[in-house]
Length: 347
Image 1 (cartoon, rainbow, N blue to C red):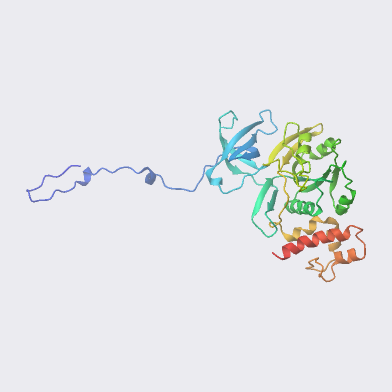
Image 2: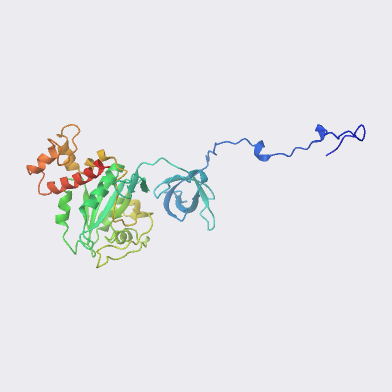
């Protein structure tokens, strides 16, 4: 910095404004903005699975250039759940070469979203899978014993999400599932029977063509065994049922999307970890009755605002059960419906 010559020894030196050096502030020179790049060149890729913050996505789906890419999420998506089945917008190095990492910068609008909560009173939801249009519920005829109410919960969650439910009963060589299946009479529900030495792979596979199907079921029911039969390259771990507790051991720890290829075409199998409970805290109670299609038809004659609970006056469903018009399983199905409705009424 330069100084002006003082008039005399007693005068203080003065600053020369022309000689002041101003250091540039790069942050001040760039106005802050919340605008993000448009990423017009982003590719649309299917999310196949996630492992410790890294996503495996399929780029170029149904083209000769179809290949898997490893990607991380962009910072602006840190609060958004990205799940198997999502259609992600991906930028960066999408070659899929070893050591490369692309970036997910957006998620396309979802057609469906399957969710569950810790219990019926917990409205904090956990997203399981996106964009599935079918749910295959896997239940064993025995070892472990089938649980009608757990299947009811799967059906409610599926119909609430706009997903078509299917049911497969495994281990029919151990026990006859006829009595169990009577619980679901009257439902628009396609049922497959499977034995350990005779799995209906072709029949189930034909139902998967052209669809994205999420497989759900209690641990130990043979879900992973069925997935391996449908998709031999899957190599999903299989377990056994504890002879003391009657519970299956969790073998699948993550949700993955696998390509099914059959003689009639291809589809997607989404395998999920086995669960012993399925909370419906996120479900709209008005949608519960829709899972019981036979009861919903009778409910059209109920008075407006009917709760369908035991003390509901003039409930058409209760009257139909008392009169025996819903067959031998009507009372059990009504009991299942009322248990679910009562849970939500207490929330």
